[in-house]
Amino acid sequence: MSEKPLRVLIVDDEHLARQRVEDLLAREENVEIVGTGRDGNEAVQEIRRLRPDLVFLDVQMPGRTGLEVVEEVGVDEMPATIFTTAFDRFALKAFDLAAVDYLVKPFDDERFAQALRRARKSVELEEVGRMTKQLISLLQERERDPAPSERPQYLERVSVETRGQVRVIPVAKIDYITASGPYAELHVGERTFAIRERMQALEEKLDPGVFFRIHRSAIVRLDRIETLRHAAGGDYAVRLKDGTELSVSRTRREELAAKLGVT
Image 1 (cartoon, one colour):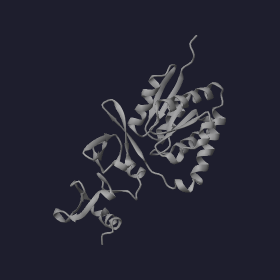
Image 2 (cartoon, rainbow, N blue to C red):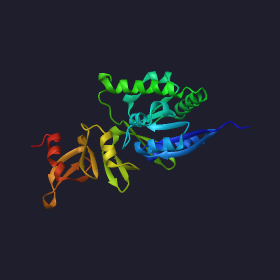
Image 3 (cartoon, rainbow, N blue to C red):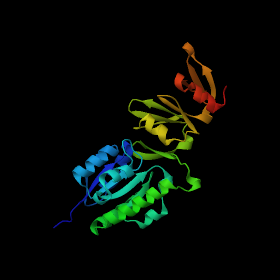
Image 4 (cartoon, rainbow, N blue to C red):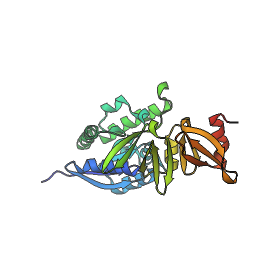
C-alpha cells in the first residue's frame, strides 16, 4: 500500500512566487498540490475547504496577512505551515528549532527541501499544533519588539522569471518602475524586467525614503532624479539621470518637491 501523499496548499500574492513553490514541489515524491490562493482571504477559505496537510503561506498579502490568516482559522485548526516572505526582518534563528518553518525569498532549493522535510515530520508525528503555536509566538514577539537595527526593513530583492529561469534583481539596482497592464516593469539600467505585481503592493514594500510613487503608473528611485520641471499643459515631469522623462501626478507634485528639497 502506497504512502498517503502530502496535500499542499500554496498562498502568495505573487504569481512567480507561487510558481516557484509549485516547480520545487513537482520534483518531490508523494506530494499533491490541492490548491493555490492569491491573498489572505482566499487562504482562509481554501484552508477551511481543502483541509490540506501543509500550507505555504506568504506573510505580507492583501486582505489578510499570514498571521491574520492563522488568527482567523485558529491555531489548533491550522495545517502545518511554512511561512514565506521577502522581508528579512521576519527571519529568526529560532525558526530553525521549529518543525514548521520559515523561508525568506528568494530561497534556494536546499533550504526549501529542508523546510519540506521538517513539515513532513511534523505531520507524521502529529505535532503541528504545538509547533505552529511556537512559530506564531516567535513571529508576534518579533513584530512587537523588533531589534533596533531591523526597524524598518523593506524589500531587498525581486525574483523575476526570464527565459524559464528565476533571476534575482537587487532593489538597489532598480532605477524606476512602470505599470504595464497587470504587470510592473522594473527598469534596471538599459534592461527591463516584467513581474506580475500591482503598483500599490510594490509601493508598500519599497523604502519610502528611497522610492517615491510619482504617478499611478510610475515609481522612481529618488536619487535617480536629475530635475523636476514643468511639462506641457501645466503638468509636471521628472527627468532622470539617464535622460528618461516621466510624468508626475499633480496630487503628488508637492510631496515629491519636498522630498527633493525643491521649493
